[in-house]
Image (cartoon, rainbow, N blue to C red; front, side):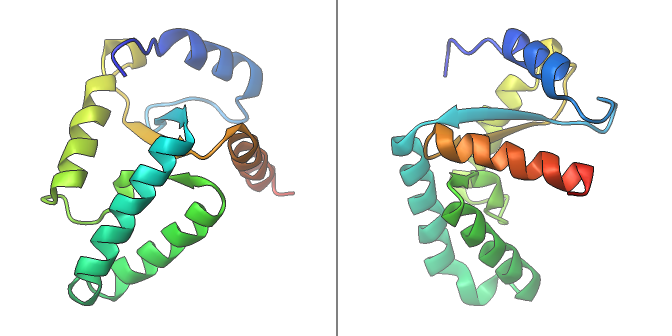
Amino acid sequence: FENINLSMPINIFLEVTLLRPFGDESDIDLVIVSEYDFLKSWEKLRTYHRKNWYRIGHYNQIALRRSGENVYSGFVTLKWIPDYYEKTRIDYEELSNKYSNETVGYKEVNIMYFKNSVELVDYYIRSFRIIKGL
């Protein structure tokens, strides 16, 4: 991830596909299309789930179930681990914070791993349809 340049892809994204104004509350999605990273992240999420299911509470159980639906749709983020003190979540936050810099106006950066480009396109088509109310 050392050579990722966020400015050009974000500018292209904003100019071509933005459906609502990009404002102070907006965040940045850093998309990584890699079956290997998708599967590795999914396994970390599953490991957390198996080890902690009965101690995380009902709300977090519902959130993890929703995360499973998203994994089925071909994407995962380690942000879904609800325990901020768990090593995998700490590592995710450190990497995410690395990209929340001057280039992106110190916006929150969400790192999302997609299984392949088909799942990536499908995710954004569904998102745009939801925003447009279709």
